Length: 518
Ligand SMILES: *Cc1c(COP(=O)(O)O)cnc(C)c1O
Image 1: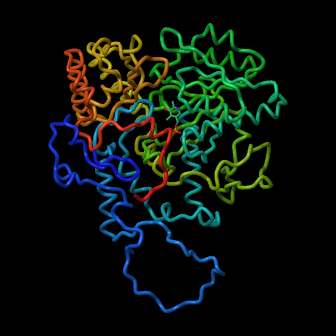
Image 2 (image 1 turned 60 degrees about the horizontal axis):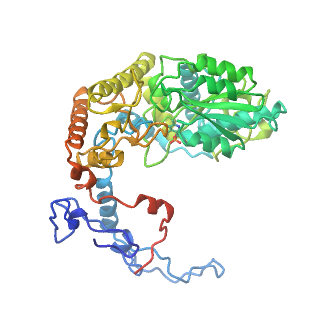
Image 3 (image 1 turned 45 degrees about the vertical axis):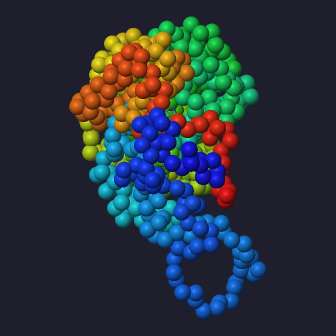
């Protein structure tokens, strides 16, 4: 296989015999262009633009000017453009096909919201503009806050966190501030976290200085109440619980869990990443939640965008509202005000600090509010109902050939284990790679950790029944092929992808972050 100087395979998969073995002279596959790295396209001593050099000017850099080469390849505009267009063609995207990644809620991003976010009044704002000139944007943030509080029934919202994980951190810092205020931060160190939790939960609790105590799941995939009762004590700071949980199941005992935690003097952090299953159906406040992040890029359809920009506002109960971070929004007869500094804080507010330079992801606020207002209250409820319906439709269609991890209906995602692959020589990873050959992004795999060889499928409400059927037919055919002994189809997969199986462990453990010329 052809390698570039940093050991990355450069040619497509045609040269190892598995994919039919057709090797092209160019390295391209049909009209899918072979694409080297930018450093391989451009040369370091090449200049991409052809401005005439200007008249000699006196340097004002005081001897600070660069003398060595900058080390970036020079590229012409078409070279640079083609590079990124070619890469974009290799991307899988929600605009391209079904994206069944469980826990991630990869739903369609309505184009109306893109249009709204580009309105010059929102798109061209600068965060340092005087607030008197940004009243419309602040009013939009106020309206978004109102919707988020209405949907969840909570008392306040912190808008600035920029991802779900960032929101978790915000919520746990509010809990920390409340404990400190009570003089109990030193004695309450323990945070209970179910072992099925998303990895960001224990990471957040640890980063906020707590110790993590794992809660096992019971046979139905929910919190084991007997163990919970044993673990609760006066040193518990709180619990971080996802509902519906990462097994796609509603935590039926959630009220009792909240009561137990509150009676013990702790706080209830709810991971709200799965709000798409319950919005308009269940009021988060009624579950006894003290803090919960809402991933606007999941439930409210704003683009996930290659790891960002997300937005993770946190709704807070009355007990925690006063600790919400700076900056926060208020209004009086003079209009909207963003409280930026500790010395401007009024009333009983005691912000724990500040999480980011500015107020949060304005573009995502516009999109999310556009989504909410175009759906309306009834529409948002229907989103949840349809998301749950679609997941159960897939569960029903797949359950005879694949093995559901738990009995009964699911919420917005269907979880399977690898029991149906037992004795076939095919693993969850192989199965997922074979899906790529079939034109599907794999589902979430090996998560949650409580299920062996987990496959977590979340279709979302934006897929039609035809799309779900095509997907189900494909998975059923793959499951049958595995059971019929067609191991090659799986062990070699993906055969049709631009690159085959990459050494992901090596990429993660020893990443090569810097271009080294040959
Ligand atoms: C996505 C997710 C998170 C983290 O959210 P990010 O926006 O990716 O930081 C946390 N918990 C659960 C259950 C999630 O699905």
